[in-house]
Every structure is written in C-alpha cells, then in structure tokens.
Amino acid sequence: MVDFIDSFHKLLPYFISFPLFIFIISLILQLIYSKNVSDKNIHLFGLFINLNNKDILLIALLLVQLFFIICSIFVNSESFYVFLFVIAPVVFFSLLMRNYYALISNIILSVFTCALIIFKDVFYAYINEVYFVWYVGLIYVVLCLSILTFGIFIFTINFGRVVKNKKLKNDEKNK
View: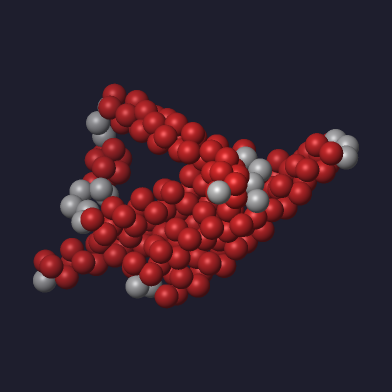
C-alpha cells in the first residue's frame, strides 16, 4: 500500500498539470481562431470533421504523449515513468493503426526522447547538488529544447499519418 501511495505521489504533478495544459491549449486556440475566419482556419478545423472514434482515440493518444513529454521538461521523474508515459501511447497508436513501420520508428524516436529526458534529469541533479556552471546550464537548456522538438516532431509525424489514413479512406469511399 505504501508503494502505491508513493507512486501516486510521484504522479501527482501530472494529474494537476494535465487539466491546466488542456485548458490553456483550448483557450489559446479559441482566442486565435474565433476572431477571424480565413482559409487557414477552415483548413485546420477541416482536419477534425468526420473523424470516427478510432481517429479521435489516435489523436488523443498523441496528445497524451506530447503532454507527458512537455511535463517531463519541468518535472524530474523516475525513468520507469518516463518510459511508460512516453513510449506506451505511441505503441498503442501504432498498433491501433496497424502500421508496423510506424511502430518501429515511433519506438526508436520515443526511446531517444526518453534518453534525452534522462540526460536532462542527470544535468539537473548535477546543477542542484554539485555546482552550477554556465556551460552545464546551457547543455540543460539545449536538452530541454531538444526534448520539446522531438515531442512535437513525433506528434506531427503521427498526426500526419492519421490525416493521411483518413484521406485514403475518404478517397476509397468516393470511388
């Protein structure tokens, strides 16, 4: 029971920050796209029209992974949770899409992202416990930016796969 409470305590920052993350993203999108209507806005919202439940689940898995990657920049966690929350959503994503090439590429990119997160945690521990040197701080910032870049890269590639899969299905229905 103590292990469960300890594990729950380590996950508490994620439970607090996830609703805030979703609220901030939705608020930003509402402010940006409600003021003016243009072709770009219509194309963006057109991606989400006629999505079935499977596509919505796939996009939700991608958003969950992106959220945990962004949270891992600000929260130092144990490596098991990093692997669980970064790799599991893309594995489920690839298996639901039945795209095994995507499974292999997603696992490789996610493992690399997890390695960057672990390196970031090591540099953060060095900065806190040993000594702050400007070049160690610079490496820490570069690692954080790299983690963010890889998270967005994984999200956009997989989101493109969902849209491409949806477009192929719609083209098959029209024929």
